[in-house]
Image 1 (cartoon, rainbow over the protein chains, first blue to last red):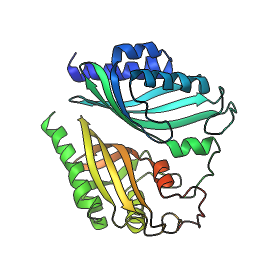
Image 2: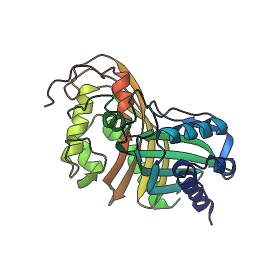
Image 3: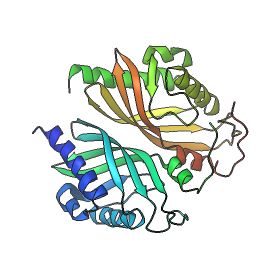
Length: 144
Length: 147
C-alpha cells in the first residue's frame, strides 16, 4: 500500500474501531502520544492521546450506540480529509443541559487529519453543531 | 499529486482571493458551475444551481463587508479538494434578519469541493455556524423575518 492509502486506513480504523466500537485502546496503535486537536466549541479539543481516549469514553456513556458512517475519504501527502455522518440515540445521560430523551440524533461532520510515521498527530474538525443543539432543543430553530 | 489535482487546488485558492476576498459577486460564474449542487445548503435554501450560493454570498458580503478568508491547508485527491480556512470579519449589516451587532468573528471552516470542467460542481461542509452564532452573540437575539 502507498503511504496515502495507509494513512486512509488509519483514519478508517479510528472511526470504525475507536469512535463507533468504542475500543479506545486501539488509539495506542494509531494516535500519537502528543496528539494535538484543533476541535470546536461543542465537542471540545482533547489534547494528548490519553485525554482523547477519556473524551471518547465519556462520549460513549452519553451516546452508547454512536455510529459513524464515512461518506468520503481523501488523502494527499501527510493529510487525510474525511466527511461522514454520526447517528446515535441520546440514552446515556445529560448533554449540554439536555436530559437523555432516547431520541435519535443525526449530524454531519468533516475533519482533516495529519499523520506522522503512521500515527494520527493532529486533527481539525467541524461538526454540524448548530443542528445538534437544535435537535437537543438547547437552542430554538432559526429561520434562513 | 497529479497536475490536475494541483490545478484544482489552485482554482480554489483563486476563488478565495479573486471572488470571496474581493467580494466580487459578479464573478461567481467564473468559479461555480450553473448547475452546481450544495449538499450542505442551509435549511430553506435551494441546494440546486448557482442561485443559492449567489444569494448566500450576497448575504455574507452585506452582513460582513470586510470578510476575509485565509486558506490554511488543502487536501486534493481525484476531482475533489478539501480546504481548511479561517474566516474573519465584523457583523456590520443584516444577517438573516439579525440586526448588525458590530461584533467580530474568527472562525474555522472545512469544506470539500468537487471540480468539473474547471468549476465547482458540488460542495460539502462549510463554516462552523454555531461558533459564528456564539461569537456574534446571536443565541437568544431577536431574529426578524428573513428576506
